[in-house]
Image (tube, rainbow, N blue to C red; front, side, top):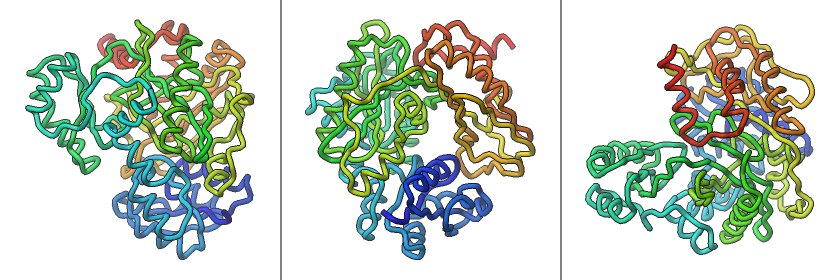
Length: 451
């Protein structure tokens, strides 16, 4: 691998370019007309414009991206996360063009990207799954029949995608009949597939994911991350490793993630996501993300490995360098996703010009960002501004250091969620690590009611 095209934008494009530079690989940025002056464009060794601001005409335009790779002499493509990262058709198109795709094979992306097929893979690997439908359902009648067998409450989920799209929780048949058409329509719009699958809804569940790396023949895990603090199925705060997880559950869950990845001959970085029942301590596989995750820096800080660099090495044909008995997790890392949304206005997206930026620094504070004074938060893309990632030798130290880092963070010109994290850090339930997937939504609702 000599020249890498980064098929993305924003902070993840900056992150990938830096990792490639560390390995002596030259880089090519692609950009829409709206991103002509973006930091990732300046950081790369070369840049190619691929279309107008609309993502459908630029960052999702496969032909334009492949043309950019050909014209720039790139021999590899890294998709980052979002956009085309988990589209099997894109991975196949990259390979068909004679380029190296930094990620798993198209067949693996397709198998693991379809939740129904992923459940079958999990079952074959002996990995527990949440009781649910064995295949996708495409009409209300079939959904009602399936829910009666599973038992309410049930969760409706898009069979062909993730990211919180199409998800509904229903408590009875009337709720299911009402929710199914809208959920199916949302899934069809997002993924081109309106099939839904149903699974038992675990009310007090933790969302825990296990990071894996594979080279097609060997797989290792790099422990787990806590991702339960979510709003509308979108993660806001992540942590490595997960607080309060029983050592036996951790050992069994990480082993299950490795078995799952081995079952498909997994290559590159990936994440197996699980629900952990807070009451019974059972864990269930829910899906696999076949890409680098937004929250990957937390794992990097507790293990000391550069996951993006490992992706590049594996894609270039090197065998997996990491050995399971050499991987340890030390301390605690917290990540705060600062987005351009206004918490006082029900998290209204707030595009605009950034006038002033102050980023936190100091020992064990990392900020992955594209932010700079004079930059523009575009209405066309995700509103993520920065990831503030903090490490401490223990959780208490990490929380104290996070308070300092968040207090230092400042952006003028657009409202952000940074101030909200300062409040969360002071909450007793957060300090104690006593929360589940519904905690943050309830806290926000109580906060709104009391304001």
